[in-house]
Length: 325
Image 1 (tube, rainbow, N blue to C red):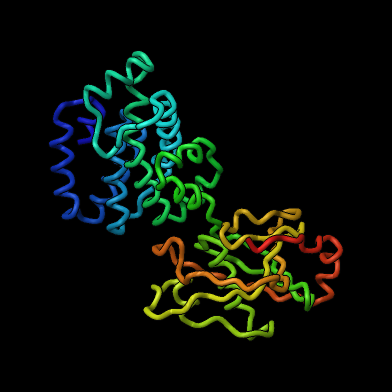
Image 2 (cartoon, one colour):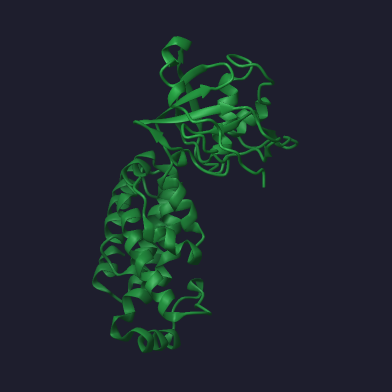
């Protein structure tokens, strides 16, 4: 199948169908070898065929194979650039990439872009396959997430044409093994925590409450069902909405929005700082992880004496006024 993809052979479609049928019976070593071959080839061949190879690599990851997704995610950037070029040249009423190209579409693309149209057109049809594969590979591989953490502007630009790219963007920004400094302004207490697999600040807020409320801080601890579904469990039937504990702000006094992600939290020096302020209005949100297949955790690493934090408070700005709407 890979040789047919590399050589442009007409037997690629038949080889792909056969590979899909055989992949479920592959042993562990064979599956790992296949995964290496697929991700490397997906980064080398023409975009459309590369998309099918990337999709097959994603299916191996779903079966538990440890797949290095870096080549797929890196190739996605070029695929997104080509797809944006195609979309901007085509204009309104873009063709449905799920339907596949045809002669009419090729002729119009060539009319708009000349002979260079082939690659952008292929990128347009390959983009959903690469995007879905990238989401899968980033979901199952923390090593892939860590290796491709850089921001990618062209992928962000292509989100309007492929919603799966929103998940790619946020998975790339997930902070695995990140240490945060947590400061409670009313009590002048502070802690260091380390987060893994936290997909948004709703999850961060809930896990902070699980670590601190009813232990170091007064208040009503989170419902255990909330904690389970924000770590490793599913949302149990009848679980009520989560009710918030604080207004989270950063070291500059700006609000840390629950809808954002931990990577949005600004850095003071080399530390991301989360300040716990009293709520200005009630908050609630649905329980459950944004990325249900990724287990989340927040570990309390250290509790600081108030004297240890004396130098921090003068550097922190007071919370800036915000609207609840």
